[in-house]
Amino acid sequence: MNKLFSIFLLVFIVFSNTVKAQDDVEKIRILFIFDASNSMNAQWQKQSRIKVAKELLTQTLDEFYELPNIELALRVYGHQTKIVPGQQDCSDTKLEVPFNDAKTNVIKIKDKIRGIDCQGTTPIALSLEQAGNMDFPDCDNCKNVIILITDGIEACDGDPCAVARALNSKGIKLKPFIIGVGLDTSYLGQFQCVGEFLSAETEDSFKSVLSYVISQAVNNTTVQVNLKDIKGKVTETDVTMSFYQKKHNKLTETYMHTMNLRRVPDTISLNPIFKYKLVVHTTPEQILDDITLVPGTHNIIEVDAPQGYLDLRINGDPNSKINCIVRKKGEMNTLNIQEMNSNHKYIVGKYDIEILTLPRIYMTDVNIKQGLNSNITIQKNGYVTVQKRNGPCQLFVLKEGQEIWVCNIEDSFQSKTIALQPGKYKIVYRKESSISTAQTIQKEFTISPGYEELVNF
Picture: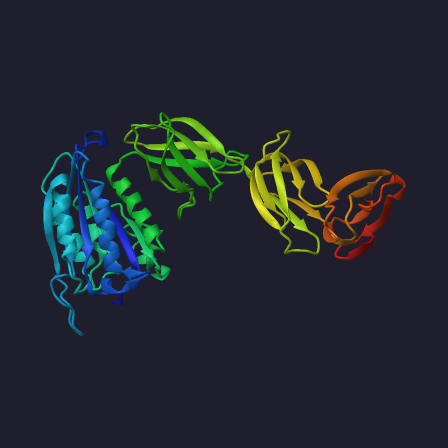
């Protein structure tokens, strides 16, 4: 079977049927299965796959050094027999570092990984089978975890799904995560029997996903954040969530809210010893200030976050980038600066907006409704070019018999072009050398969308 030019991370959380309850788990045992097949030498972004995998795994191992009740082990495959055309050693898998406490084995595993050369093939099924049957010593109070890091699918005609079924028949439950970089989704069906798919397209995202999976492996406390719409349904998503330790207001975790393949909010892990403040970065932000988690269970956090859209357009000028100030109704603080010709989500409610045209356009009580677009369209600007000698000069818009100030035109400017909304205007000017009020000059003109007027003094 051809290998994929992608990187997968499969995490098998193995629970023995002898474990009575999560509160009784005294020890967590994590077995890393590391791919050292020849294809790991291939380039990925700025480095080879094997170099990236080694660096990320050794960095991750440091996180275990001071953790109590953690044991680590390492199995490697593809590192003993060099692959040659037409031949591959499908028995090339070995437990290199047996289980011991994390403080002892972190150093041993890091040393072993540094010395590995990538040579052979990818016997995933055999590695999983031997890991499940041979690598974990008997233990009545253990949570057993297998983490497989590989850049390809099974290459030895083995069947990871069959291995999963065989282990299940012995009372071992597999719960994997599959993380792929550049994965051809046509291969996804081969892993549906053993896990959940996540994608990592860069080294940074691979690092984030690896840290996330480690958190899942070590921590029994899971969290699901339900962002509810106006009807109380869990439909809102695609917004950043920041978790802070409440006592010290210290940022601990940042996630982009995501719906999984079942279209329910994805599960994350949090340390239950802290109380949390959750900031959901909608516009405006929604904040839950006092969250207490129940250890060893699946916690659901519900946030009212109904959202609709403010759609701002300029008629006939789709490329203009005029800014618009958005405020909550009746408040002075700026909530958002949104460009014209853009669409932005806001929490359902009423807003005041100020469009930074000349003259300014003010709108109050703009109503944002659940899942709908509130459309605001303004006219395209026209232009006036003012040519004058030095002297005080002011621009007014004429409305309902009133002169409403728009802006000053600097004394020193002799020629200036100003973008204006369509309407009737007046410029009032006096030469700097004039010493009589009677020498005030006034000129009226009309601005049409897209057209330019010349006012010459």
